[in-house]
Length: 213
Image (cartoon, rainbow, N blue to C red; front, side, top):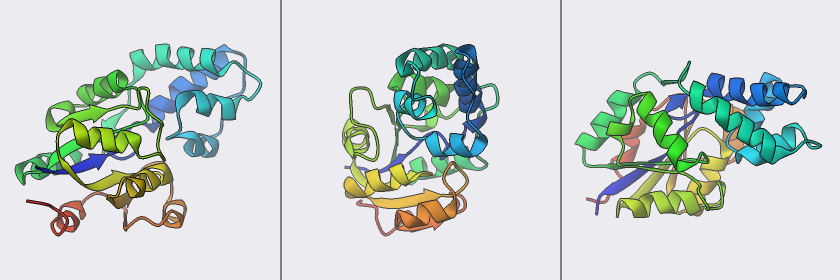
């Protein structure tokens, strides 16, 4: 049974905020609604898409806005999105050290796979698990499903939001929060992650005592 490391996708492995924000604002503008500020957008990221629109435009049809978002995002998801510095090398190193690498994301599985493929990360991952039909983070379901998919022993949840930290803890995993994504250090610290770092460079060393070989 391989030790499995679970990663969030957006804001953790991939710097995708610009493309998500562009599609989100496009859907709102097309409906004649004001777009959120950058600060408001950062607070929305990590939530289910329909919930994001309910919060941004409470009086609007969130389902219709979500469909407009998806139509735009399918065509523009990789306009500016790129892996964070060192991520491909990190994933290759961890795979070489015997870890199973899985993604647990609030995105739909098909969308998450397309994004991972578009930015060159899909070949480095053992499984990509979306929240299709599962309670989204901070519930642990998508994290546990990702680990089960590879028959692994979950050792750590790596993410950039409090939702990731809470989901990882609920799944019984060590939690590693990275501040280069959507929640700042103070917000993440309030969730009490086991490790809080500016990037992923220390992850391999911190995983060593957790791995079940």
